[in-house]
Image (cartoon, rainbow, N blue to C red; front, side, top):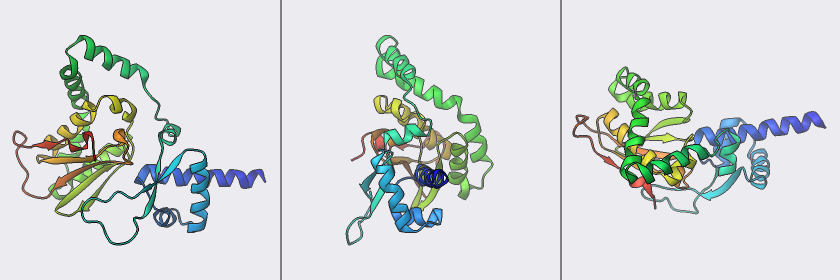
Length: 233
């Protein structure tokens, strides 16, 4: 009996980990990735929902919605993300609060956020510059994954989407969206083109999604950025 319970817990953790790595997922998605029956996936999801590790949501659709009832997807809750070693960094929040109060307000926080991402930039730059131009978003996704962001790149109409399924600073970014904005601006400069943030984990979405359009790359100086994801609809 104990061995059966251990196997059940192991499979349940695989289900949760798959949602972390791939973002909000349907029962069919999970069954296909994990080679389980849909009935088994539903059983594990019921347990994870009861434990407040995952929650059911209506699938978010960008662009024209297909006919029929929207598919139900399952996403990690804040408690579920905490289970994967993402803890609320109260010291970081207190430090940013001090900067905001005593060192220049929101502009100072924004400057800190830009310096923070620049301190991590060399690895990302090397990965992107070494890649074929058509593979640069994929190269950036792999570099981000190595830093714990569980990132993927996928094709989208007239462009690509860079998806970050995990964010180590999501709790801090809930209070200080300058962290998200600095990251988005950096992606724009790094890829040499306008990008648009469609969604962020910090604002309750299941995944941070950045749209990168196809087209001729711009120079770093002319690249632009939209931070629509600061408070996505």
